[in-house]
Length: 339
Image (cartoon, rainbow, N blue to C red; front, top):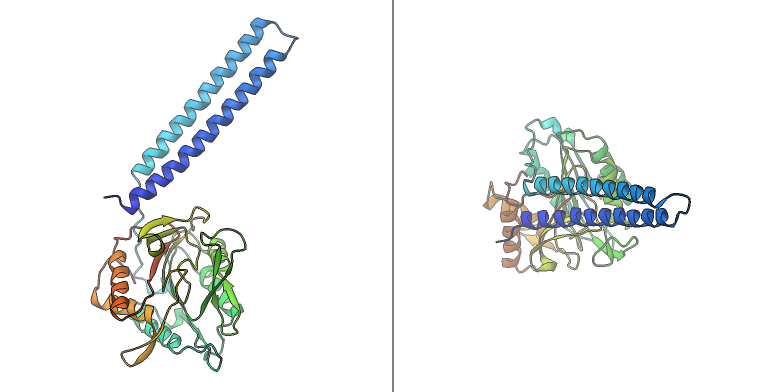
């Protein structure tokens, strides 16, 4: 059975083989042009011309052999590649969170479960060592409101103020939307968005730009989006159990890898809405409920088991949305969940 890792390796090997072929073609073109120039020269003898041509051919063969050796080494390295095991530090000072929930109170777009999502996630991560000093909360009700500008500012601060070994937890629960793709990096021709309490949108391009600019190596960012059209809201390269592609592993070749580790669970595909639900006598986002319930039912499960359990719970509860799982670097989806 072909695994996600098999496909990842095959794709990377194809990439380096294409680079090799391009470089060899360039060397051959240069060789042909140089030989043509030598042959057209009238000021040197035929024997000198042939000697110069032979030298060019020798150098060409040397360069091609160097490229071949590099290709062979790169393929061997890829064949032996194993995804990095993500280990979360037990040091509570290394755990930082930004939790955003927006009910849009008093507007035509009012929701009811988003602030409860924040409270439920806060309770969950507090038991895992996230201290109050390291958890920033923004809602409609906090003194600093979850506006477009404030969301971008606090997300940037979360990334900037982190250091190697940190575990960052980001939650957004609120409205999502989409707009026409501006820079042609989307497979579906639309940019996904989240919406601040001032009803101003934040593009996936803007969120990815902050990650690419400020997320450092050896930092793990776990992001949870309980919002509509959120399947690719961080523009991550690797998608697992992709519901828009028959639950297959897919890659977006237009997206760059992230420097640090980014793992995202989103509430639905880019084509779906996420439900504001009333479950167990409490308003919640259906996806947030399914995540917490799945973790409760299957402690110590893998990411694959977690996503499948969430999907099963939502389906049994008559919700059509399908949570998605993606990452900025290739990860082992069968590794144990660390949230």
